[in-house]
Image (cartoon, rainbow, N blue to C red):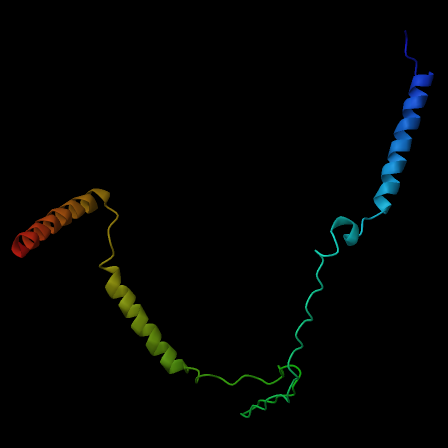
Length: 140
């Protein structure tokens, strides 16, 4: 038996498929109510929400440049400086002090010699272990 595209089998299959798609589409439009899904005894009415306390008049804050309008903060007031800015002589003095400190510390900069650092760390570990042993022996 040969199956041809223009035969009755394909026409019937197409008809069944379109009927199934139509029933699925129409079935999706119907929704089930909560009463149908659960017994009415299981459905409880939610308790009423508590109402917020009545608003009082906005608190008035006094101070230099502060205005409380009760709605939004006033951002148009320029902020006051927390401190006085330094002048040129103070800047020069601080720059000299920091440069001198940098130069002093530059002479004591750690070296990148890994072998010398390893020897120093081994010596430190040995003396540290010896000191710990002495403290343990003294406490006994």
